[in-house]
Length: 213
Image 1 (cartoon, rainbow, N blue to C red):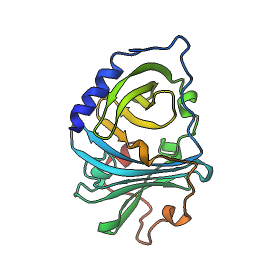
Image 2: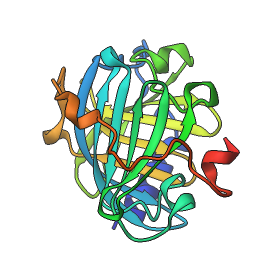
Image 3: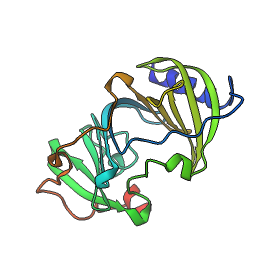
């Protein structure tokens, strides 16, 4: 099901401006904090679900996945089928496997592993792709989309005429489908959610994505 949704996203982003507006809207600016739940499909690996906590005011964020096996960072360090979190705090991205009692520092702001600004789509000169029907495993309806070129083509999808996220495509291999009803802009978080566990090591060892960025 999620792979079909990924193909739906691919179809949309390959046919820009299905219903392009006369005056293209600017890319969305994220709130300084938000939380949202998602399902995720990695075409070469598998599917998972999780939660994203974003807190730019305090320069921290956390992405929890039900399994890290299919994540390009977690899976390259430890590919066991266990929950894995990305925690960005104090300029470092840590990987945490709570059920395995494992944690290590992956990469830093200088490596491009920090938290992005709320204006990152504008700063990256994102362009409006158009409005088109979108169907994912968790939502369907009309969506606006923007293309943001980085190391790979990226596409951000929101409910048409709104700022509520419904999808993020990192073409060709990673697709996140957001659950709009779970979206909490301007969320307030407890500091404990961003605390490192006592068993955390300063650096992930071995040859993995962390050492290659």
